[in-house]
Figure (cartoon, rainbow, N blue to C red):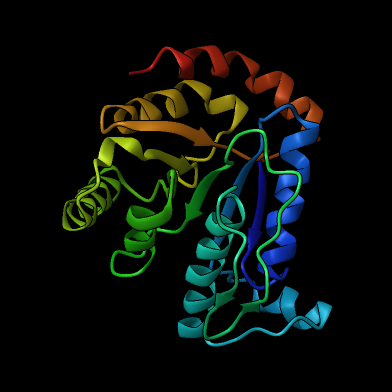
Length: 213
């Protein structure tokens, strides 16, 4: 999976990058996309950091452009507020249309975009109650659009509790509560020591997580 904020690359180039990854990986690419949040990184790299409302507009246009570029029957122009493409050419086409994961739990904008364009959402494990509410909001957005909410995988990024090797059982127990809500995948990052040592220590959790739900 290639994950990025919408501000870092032009959407036409981004779609081509993901397509190349899909072809090279034998059809296994996925795109994780969000409205971007890390202002310090933008300033440090000299990348423009528009206001939040504009970033969401750019996110929606990027989702539309990717969908159009991955449609073999539509290489026509795209005319948006922020992006204009004379031709949405993408050759070769991806081996399979890359799945799109949209990150964030905003109930009015982000989850609406998930319902309209996404194959998966990514929420933070702030609390079981909070994630349950956001899943219900996503279902309502899907109902409004006439979409089956079961088409969308619900994923979480482990924020609380963190996946600490010495508290592995506690972490598995907490993730079981999310699995009961219908969470499909948990995304983790190393919390201590070297990444290799952390992976070795947490490796048994992979099987335990797979057995949940």
